[in-house]
Length: 310
Picture 1 (cartoon, helix red, strand yellow):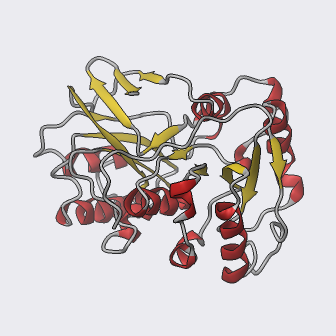
Picture 2: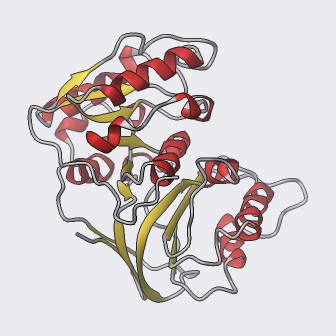
């Protein structure tokens, strides 16, 4: 395991940089990418669409071998400054152990995505100690985004360009006040749960954990939070940021608590600050970009503030 304490932070993008789109999970079409291509080009970037990007094997963007080779070629290419994962779905975990991430230690580059791409955020944090960007993906970028100032795309651009970032969000009735600092880690709760005990699992001690999820049954949320608690992922945190818990489901006999209440109860015995309702995750054009592996300051009182530290 790569354990250097100071994370590798990829350099900021500049106009003229070459960036690529990869599809490590679900398949994608050229038509679906057009708005993102126009947006990235409006930022002054050269967009690379690698060979085999549009292959399909059932729900996947080609076979495991195809997806591995495509992503590996972009990791290996020192001229590629950032890799945007086209979409999530499912499939990244099937290829992560086939990939050689060691070139990123010499030529770090931003890897961008969320949802299923949490696999890469966690693996790169644990095994390479490199910062990554949890943010909107090409599949989410609407037509006309280059002419709009959307929270999701503008925060992503500012993160990529290395600007100072500070977010404030309104208070939530379940928030727990406090101030703390630590490296920001995490992502999609279902993916974090699936990585427990694997080579991609994250050490959360002393860190600020971010979680979000979509389209889950409430008892599933409870089971996943109990897993994180029993496996020691919650006790040593310096703080918890809860993003969107979107489109949750319940059974005929109600579970009796919302997703947010389930999370609150799972961390009730700990003393660190907790922020609920942070605008990131599966929430369309309001999905704020988060630099995973960067040090942040979390301050929760009547409102909540997340400040990315130098």
